[in-house]
Length: 84
Image (tube, rainbow, N blue to C red; front, side, top):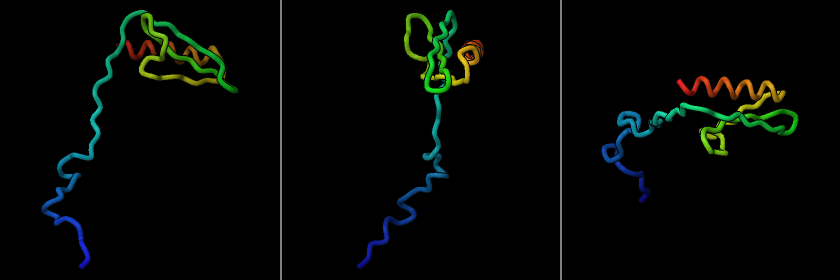
């Protein structure tokens, strides 16, 4: 005898119950002074921001650009937008 799996009534349709939806919690924004860090990586530059005494990128976000100035400008813009 071949088993055909659970009956339809035993397995709810996940699309109807919303179980396959991902919810994202609002990310807290950091207000206050920030520092911009940058370093070369291969043929381009990366930049990130930190707040307070932190030394890791805020929300693990690293911005990539062709030059140091461009990468730092992107990081500055990101910091100013995320502080609102």
